[in-house]
Length: 266
Picture 1 (cartoon, rainbow, N blue to C red):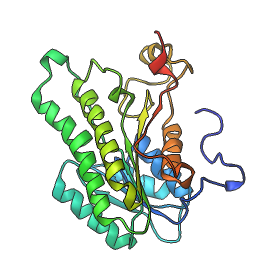
Picture 2: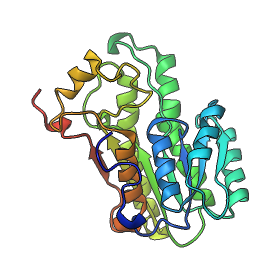
Picture 3: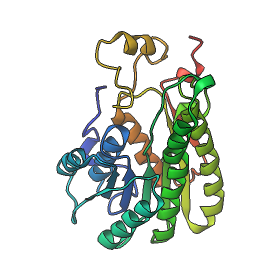
Picture 4: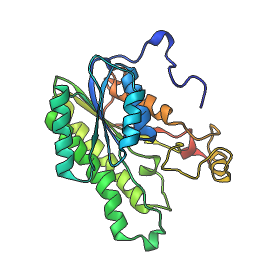
């Protein structure tokens, strides 16, 4: 873990405009979603974590989250299932009494050669990463309260750069950039900012071969100008910034956090 992560803010001070807000984070049981839920709770946000079939991990997350005046929530819902997602957001609104923030992080991958990529896998990946992300944002917008709100989609550097091993993933993330820009324009005058966080290589369960000392991880890190893969907490910090008042004039933007790998000649 890079120095300074964890409870890294001097004097316990966080970013402006998050404390007291209420948020939903999808795909929150592990990886970037978990780190983001923890960071938001640390900032004084009341968080509803949405997972799919990861009850033990979600319970562990709730126990680890910084307590606020009222309890956080954990809900099981498949973001590709419209009815389940709507029920989950109804439960959040009933439990929280309001909602201002969303991090749409849930995602999946299917590895295959582009010339042989099964359309069933394409449908699964797009059902979660693109259709599911949009339905999540739509459910949030229908229930958002207060004069202002913010959405962060967790995309990928592969919305811009190719990903030969998973064309469905790359295409879904490219589509998410279009959703971000369109919603940003549509919602701006309603007080909602919409942005896209595009991580590069992050050590999460989605990259199971990136274990400490592994040749696969070393090969990737050799291509990164900053010399290493990212930790989930680093992406959580960017998400917190985009949700906060520190980013009050930022909307419709994709913020790439990839250690410079997009510009690497390697």
